[in-house]
Amino acid sequence: MKIEILGTGCPKCKQLEENARKALEETGKKAEVVKVTEIDKIIGYGVMSTPAIVIDGEVKAYGKVPAPEEIKKWLK
Image (cartoon, rainbow, N blue to C red; front, side, top):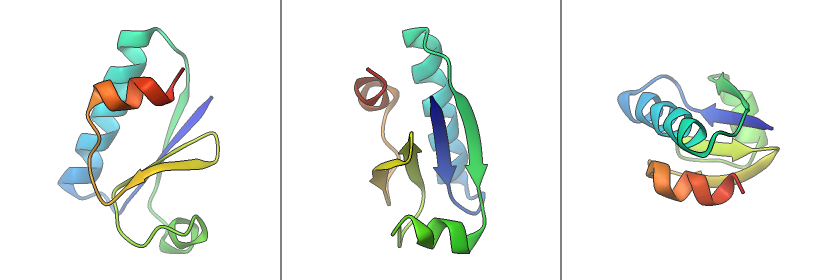
């Protein structure tokens, strides 16, 4: 499983990464967590507002910071 955090490094992007890592820890799932900061790659996903979270190539949310509980639902 691969989780990508799309964003330029703003506080919300960092919070989203923390939430994703917490969700992984709480579910016991293993995943590679990657930060994507290149604007071209972010736009390539069709994301126009950050932060965004992509799980296995599928954009799950953008423009907000989902809570760990919401992220855990996507990990199943």
